[in-house]
Each structure stands twice: as structure tokens, then as C-alpha cells.
Image (cartoon, rainbow, N blue to C red; front, side):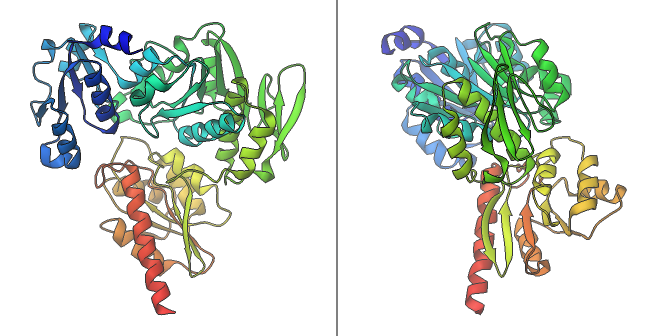
Length: 462
């Protein structure tokens, strides 16, 4: 591996565009391989903060601020962070010269292990995390990364042919990918990231790269209940497996009453019970089925899959129970950056919650969310850039008890005042976080801290 890397990168001039966490790991990888590096980012040194000082210690050339895309034609390779719009003229020129690359593209190039991947508009992280646990519980060495966890490029040399690589992949990571994984999942397709992709057609085309370059011996897991993903089966080069909450599918897995059933065409086997799953919500039953199919096709046992269903409690920022204070439960669903995700969260509770929503705008429609809020939310507290759009969608649907506040701190404080014993306070923004936070994780951490403050105040008053 080291000889191959040196051959590919020694002496190459490489510009790395976007200095997020994954690309810092990539810079270390390329520097060790012998490349001459230039790190580029629209943010200034003060905005990058500690990351700037970390990059400085690596001794690479840094170009920051408005001129960060200057002179790209002077480089042999231009590696672009997933969040950077690819339609910028400078990047289009580099693409035309065949010089664009990505961290995920390099993982595909250098991984000696077979790759599994999960994409979709929602449920990606939960499905990926579930599948990873199922594979590990079956004794299969598995490296999980991509859009979650530690960037795998930094440990690519440690991954052996007998291991598995499991990736969560966003549309940004997929859009220019020229390889597809051995096994893929598309959980669902709904409006998302139209501020970057501009049209649904572009967005769907990016997602389709998860199977577009597959071979006949590869496989694809699709959501039968979603007409867009179901139609993808017609294009898939390899074997297709379906999962469904509404139909008996084969080959695949489906919900039948309380039974989760695996079918391979010749046999049907109940491998788990819906009532035993710890994750709340119908959408998480679908996520579990998708993860079960992916992991089982890769060698995970049905018994290990069932055990994970009975023990997996979720991942941070995804319907995460933060605390119960005075009989009020506070849930962190900061990952809900689209209306569809917030709708799924709202449908996970039997009693209408107090919903905190709003954030930065991805140019999505809030019409259906407005109807669901009207039908099933006790109080709605809005903040952030999308507050006016969500407010109008709710009013168009008939209205609800509604408040608008300046920021998340004010929203959590108001929610705690409105809440009565037995209520749920749910942060599920239906919007991205970038108007106030670096990412949805930072927003979720702030919510946790604000709830902890309420918990401390409540304890002090006892």
C-alpha cells in the first residue's frame, strides 16, 4: 500500500478545497504519501480557529478567504470537500480537466476490503449505525465512516481484504463518484439540499451513483414503499432486495403485524419482533429492516440482527432522550434538517409534543409539515431563518398555538415554561443549522446544555 501511495502522489501538486474535519485527515494522508499541498477555504484563519493552528503545524500552504479558489489550474489534483458547491466556475474548469477528486473517492480507490454504503434523504445514520453493529455482533471486522465518525482515509492502510468498510454517503459525496459499493442501500428520497443541487432531478441523479457503477454480482437494498426508490430497481445492475412496512416483498424483508419477516424467495422466516425494537417510530422500523438486509447479505446472522434490534437505543442527535425534568421529557432531534425528518419525529409520539423548529433555509417546501404540525403539535416554538416559512405553512393549514423567539436559548426556556407533566419537548428543526451553528451536532450539543441548565435549576428548587 505504501509503495502504491508513493507512486500515485509523490511530488504531485494537490489543492484541498474545504478544510473540514474529513479533509484535515485527508491532508495528513496525502502529505505522508509525498504530495505538495495547498489547503483552501472560504473561511479566514480566525473563523477556522483551532483547525487553522493544526493545519499550520503540518507546514502546508494555506489560501483563505475570498480568493481561495484562485490558481487551481496550476494543480495536478483538486480534492473537494463534500459541502463545497461543485458548480463554481473554478471547480467546473478543474472537473473539465479531469482533476477533481474527493476523500470518499480515495477510500474507494485504496480500500482492499469490500465496501457497503447507505444513502437516502433520511435515516442514513441510524441505518448505517445499525448495520455496523449487526456486522460486528456477527464477528465481522467492520470499519464505519463516510458522513459519520472518523474519516477512514487516515486508517485505510490498516484495512485488510477480509474486513468490511461501511459508509454513510450524502448526495454531495456521491455526486461525482465513479465507483459504486459492493452493497448499497437507498432508504428513501424526498426534497433535500435543493439550495445546492437546484433540482430534484440533480439530487436523485447524485443518489443514483450508489448503484450506477455496480456489477452483476453486487446488490442493492431499496425502499419498496417509496415510488422513487422502488423505480431504481429497473436501473440496478446487480441483485435487488426490497424492504417494506406495507407489502410482502421478496427477496427482502417486511413488517407483518408484529413480525419482521425475511424472505429469499424460497423461505420466509420471522427474524425479529417490532415490539422488541428499542428505537421509537415507524421510520425506525424501516431503518432496521434496511440495515438487516444489508448486513445479512454481507454475512451477518439473523440472530445477531435480532439481538441488535433489542439493544440498540439510537445515535446522538436523532430522537435522543436528553433528560426528564419535572415529568417533562426533552428530546434532541437536531439531525432533522428537512421537513420529512421532522414529520417522522412527530409521528413517533402518541401525544402531541411541544415542537421547537426553524434554522437555515435549504429551499424546501414546508406545506406537508404545516399540516402535520396543525394536526398533532401542542405548541410550536419557531426560531431561525426559516421561522416565517414554517409559520406560514402552519397558518395555511389551520394554525396552532404558535410562538416566535430570537434563538434556541429563548425557545428552550419558553418550552420549559409551557410544558406540563407528561409533555414532550422536541427539538426537530426541519431546517439546517448554518444560520447560527457550525453544524447540526453543535446545535444539538447546545440544546443538551440548555436542558442541563433547566435540570440544575429544577434540582436547586427542590
